[in-house]
Image (cartoon, rainbow, N blue to C red; front, top):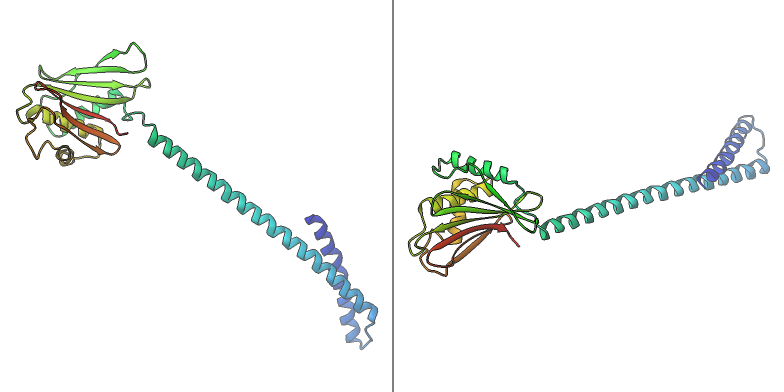
Length: 243
């Protein structure tokens, strides 16, 4: 359609320019301009105007269509991004680190803050009969051990510290230090003061944890940190993906 309007514009413009030149020459020679030339000039000018109007209209429509397609595509991308973000938020898969990365980060925190007696040498993996998850265990001493759950894709899903002893006594010593180290391990940008803040939020620093039904938790960066006492002989500190 744009080609047709282009042809009409050219067929109208060229004769109009020719008649215009003839009219100018006739005026310079003081010749009389005939009505025929005037009518033909007006018709050619009208034809050229129609062709030009058609070309401009079609160009404008094409530009608008392109803009609409771009907006629609961008809207589709935004929707896809939002859907992906929602899927990521509703379907957390773990800590986004392997057991080897976990061990290295844990030992890195131990070395950085000189937390003696907590280095991990080797995580002993135990395969699950369901083959969906597996577990590992590391024993620090006869009272403190670490247990972790690993997804099928080898990413860490949760870790739990078990401390055996009289839960009526205030929590402290190596158990509290191990809790801080785990917090630092799962938040690489945290300082030791940040880890202390998490422990404070749980409730371990503003009171003596000496009752059998204590259960305190806080959520940071999508992870839940929970300290609980289920009996008089064992305390647990667990880190899981927040739901």
